[in-house]
Length: 232
Ligand SMILES: [Zn+2]
Image (cartoon, rainbow, N blue to C red):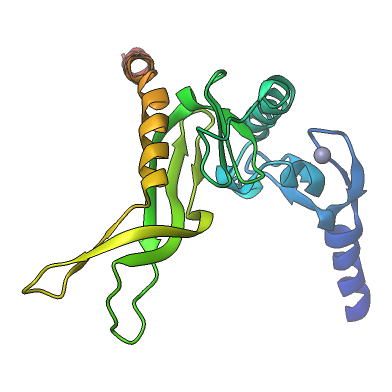
């Protein structure tokens, strides 16, 4: 009879030190450094880490095909968009860089993406709380990119401060203590310019959404027919 410790050693060898191959790049290594995907393919940590957090990529819940889709987008942005990306200071706001000529943008040090690929976005200015209850008409705070959603491949940029110490204006009503903060003028200016660029693709976006819907409906119909044929 095998001793208990031998059984443990066997388990450790099999589950932590056995050698596997990355289904994407072919790298071989210890199983403990690899993720098992939902289709049982193995993915090495460097392939996994090549996908930015905005995609919320989780190998355990994804297939190799889904990974390859994200990977080819990353290759596309690196090889096609990054080399032509020329941010214009007039159109940018802090770490949100915009290239109005090529209609591209980049948040912090993430990847470059097309403005036409943005499904929705939202920025806001948040003033610091007043200290000691003293009212001042001049306020400072941070500008946040609250959300930005990319359509294809789906990505969500969450709460990101894009500029610190922005200055805004506060107003107080005579009979109420409600204070309304106003955006710093340069944020409003930035949003106006950015919206003009984004709006250019409105028709294209709606058309694409429409095409996607038609494709989805067609697939559903085909699946329905297939089931009907099988049951007949
Ligand atoms: Zn790999």
